[in-house]
Figure 1 (spheres, rainbow, N blue to C red):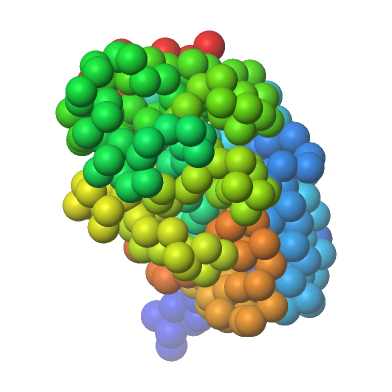
Figure 2: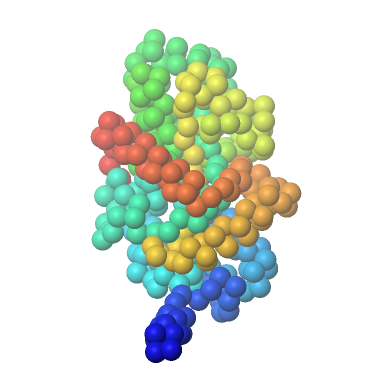
Length: 322
């Protein structure tokens, strides 16, 4: 009897100190840190999907924009937050896989300090050229560049940005040399390319789609592993010339490390259901993006692979942030 009483007391104590069950979560608003300023693609997608998630689970998911320091300010807020499911991070691959290699100051290991929840989606860059350039395919562009090493120039959104790194990866795999012309953001880079000032550009689909549809730029390929729904006629770089080539801006939902697995599993299920709806696919397509989904483990593996990819590219090219 004494042993049974002791066991009962221990069970009661354990129940009082255990993390909240998934069935009771969430019973108050959830803070979703977006390590970027309002108005960009990351912020737009986060707001749309977190509203849907809130409707699905019956709670508010409130966006908290924390830009600055290459996203490390927002990421550190989440890294230091209680692992109770009430602080999440909706972040891009720039913060998670690129900036750590470009001198972003952090006090944590980006691969270990968070609990991955789900890969939300991705959007590729587009390799486009000015119509005056005699290259209608990726192979023709590579041939032109090989004929005159360093003579062709490409525009990017700035040193260390994904558009720059995508070009660096392209040059490395194609074994060619081109002149880098960095701009302060996508807008002036696209304007310069459309005007013929710089004949080649790597930029997000949403940034160049208006110019390519107007005939001011010629889209040669997208940089994702497969074609995108927004532009199914544009081939991938991988199928056009460089097998295995892939470069995308992707978005993931994360929580502080140690967040109860029941909460991670529930939000993963809810988000997978949302990503599979026609409405969400349509919204993402408007940004030139594709939904992803899958398990938390798949996000962890994808994150690690992309992190390692950009470490190799940045080191080989000697790239440094502006």
